[in-house]
Image 1 (cartoon, rainbow, N blue to C red):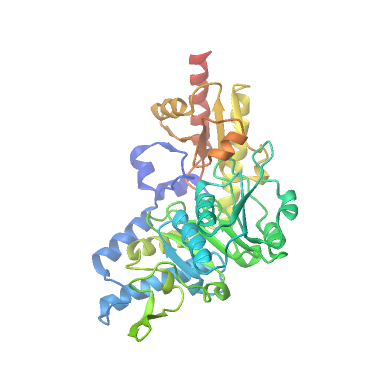
Image 2: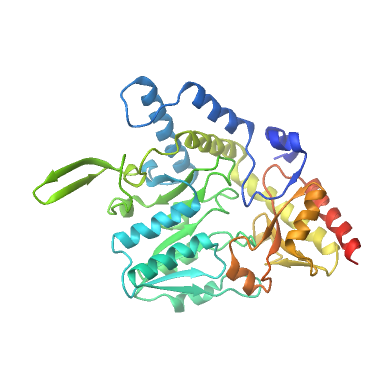
Length: 409
């Protein structure tokens, strides 16, 4: 995969000329995704599953096909295991509420998350636990911010209902062994929920091979538009769950009888997609997946690992003022490198880099507990890579930091 050829597909890079190193927050969009969404809105737009007229049926087919494309991408057993939501955060919220609503989680039960997790995979479980009287237990991290999975067997027990964790850290880039975690959780009958926001866009994720039960990820981090995400769940689990959100599109029939209102829920996945869904966004996500499939996820992953290795090398060359957070081995992490420059506030580093044409993320990255554990309570500077980044972007980052170091010497 030639990054210099790939970047030609991204109009924003051509127009702005910036070294865009913030794909962990949101990726740029290729021309094919933009054009697919515009073409759909210009020629094929109508609400789905609402009309028998030809345009509505055409739009419905496109929307359903998007489910099929995403299902194939993660190797789901069936397209109806794919539920479209707004983003990863909403997917995990929906899952937590669904399990509580259906009494899968109740008083006295336990939910395990990790200290490395994004708030999107901590707060939903904390709030649901408070609501039903359950308890959240946090698996600790080591000095590199890596979850101490060797402690999991001691933490799980007969009251463990859910083990939820981030597949790849949005701060350190570390990739956890999801299959190993799933087998330990399943040994006590617990369900496994994976936050795949930082893994699905950057590596091959096969839900059957990983032996997990639920997976959440966002379209906007994988070349697609904002406003669409995915909650995948095993069909045998989803089909026995009632949705916590009801409304248009979720039911087959509502009747008023002697005992009040009765509801017959629709088939999967529609019962979980309340209201008018993200139709245009689904078209964009389908095109984004097709683009990634053409590149090959193995090529995407290997490209990012090479960039990560090169970045770690360049930062190390800058001397002891640069502190990298997390493991240094590129073999155990994806394309994310978080670091600090001496005692300079991360936001000031970000502003400096912006003046030199480098876009990075600064702050606590919605992972406050992890930053506290890493001794970086004020946050970090995060450089994250994708298919359109080249070694020149890393050079620009390193050279700009080198200039900064000269000014503070």
